[in-house]
Image (cartoon, one colour):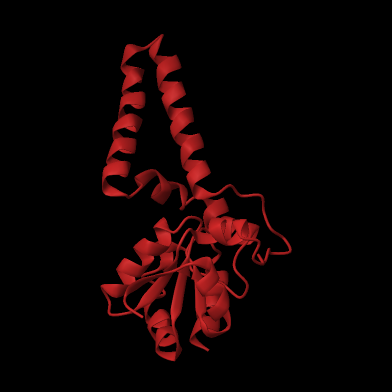
Length: 188
């Protein structure tokens, strides 16, 4: 396996027992449904988990997973920069679920929206606020212009600053003890 090998959902399902699956979505997204046996290490915490992921990769192949495959591809690139080979799930958990494969949900799963949906809601709300406030205070239209520029930059660079900010909100964060438990399970 090379540093950024893509696996289709069917290929991953056939090898699921031999893969160490790491879901890089936020804890809320992970709790709403993930691949069986997946460990949650949010993309924002990947650097903190690097040593443990190197250990896990030494025991077998890593499969990085997110909702669509974009964040897991970023995770694979970051791991490859540190000499850790990992595969990404093509189409992410959305493609996995669409094919009818098993999804595990946390018993206390919170109703957290997918990050893409959170970004669309935040961006739309800020644009609308800028336009409405701009009717009274013209300078407020710069809010809308700033968000538009950020969305264009996001598309061109395939990154999302707003997602990075939203990922730090309390409902999207792992408690330190949860991350520690996940890292211990991966190291074990």
